[in-house]
Length: 95
Length: 209
Image (cartoon, rainbow over all chains, first blue to last red; front, side):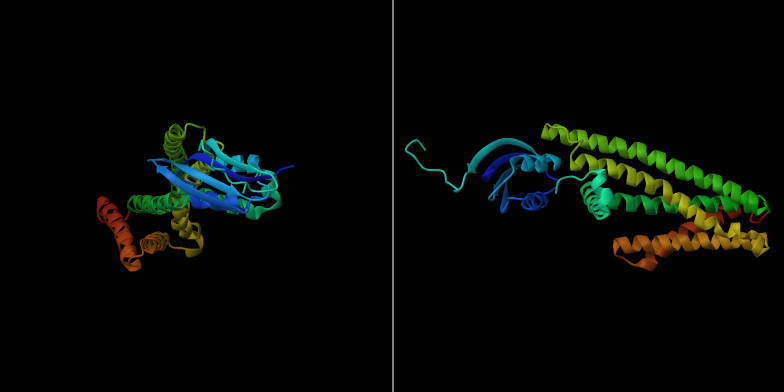
């Protein structure tokens, strides 16, 4: 059963399509309740985006497909939360 | 929205238009196509003015001859536009895509960007071929009714007036794009027609055949 609740991705994408379009398309996916995209580095033709997606049943395959068709490449999966509850990262003495 | 295939489009043609609009925005097709449309329609009209004046000062009295020359010229302009735009536009787009691929370190051919780029090449080529052909055909229109008009000189005159009117219309179109004076642009394009007619007339010794 798919129970992916949060995904935080590091994505390299061309400037166009813009993050406005990308966020809207991602938000229309079934099982997604909200999307946040923030740009932390911008270059001449491309930008690095941190994409945060939350919802009760996120499909990673669909998210990956949409990012790819918009010209983006997932560089890393920085955070994943799955299950019945959304668990936040716990601070430990190690960090 | 995940990219649609032909079967989806067949069942929901609305999606095709939505995707085409999105691709057009992405590739900036509208602006380029508009530029080509005005520029090449302008070319088409002025070329046919040249054909008309050449025939007039050459003393051609048979409208069929003028039509044949005009049609061949229009066709050549259409083919030239289509071919030329396809080659130059695809070369430019390929270069742009390659540059972007180098920056993203991935192939973008199957992405929206790649598809938008290919659609832009086709759209721009069609506009570039169709615009001069259509503009030229409009100007030639009175010649098709030469028999009904009766007098070949009147037919020449009607065709030239149609050409000037088309030029004025193109000027208005450009004025609308720029958001400036419609009449001002119209008069400027009209002037090009008058200059062309006058020079051809003088070239023929200041008289028709």
